[in-house]
Length: 168
Image (cartoon, rainbow, N blue to C red; front, side, top):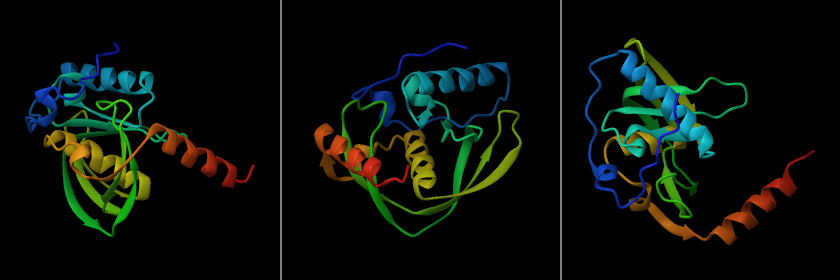
């Protein structure tokens, strides 16, 4: 496994629709493993193939907390409902944060690294992260959906207030 360089905006690759994965081989497994290592090294929650320079419909989200990472190959949105606005950031846009409205509940269909299909439902923060990564596969950047930019100082204050609210 290797840490790959994260592609930063304004690289054109980030704004292009990615190619469907048709070959499920060792090369794909290496890509997934490298993406995971790169995401962890960058302290991210999700990463998509174009963010490591590969135009393929491959993304990963990882919520930690003892859960396995979710590998999404050729993901398709089956259902979305509700709406929620929250703050997002992106590994390809260091230091940029903003409020983005997204569906609060999603159901997706995607393939595993062996090509088998699975379905997954997610809500809240998990749904947001999945949709953010799926957008990358279509060349859609979160900055195009921001309704209000948040400065690093504002974000730090929000996070500090949330920590103070949590019971110990």
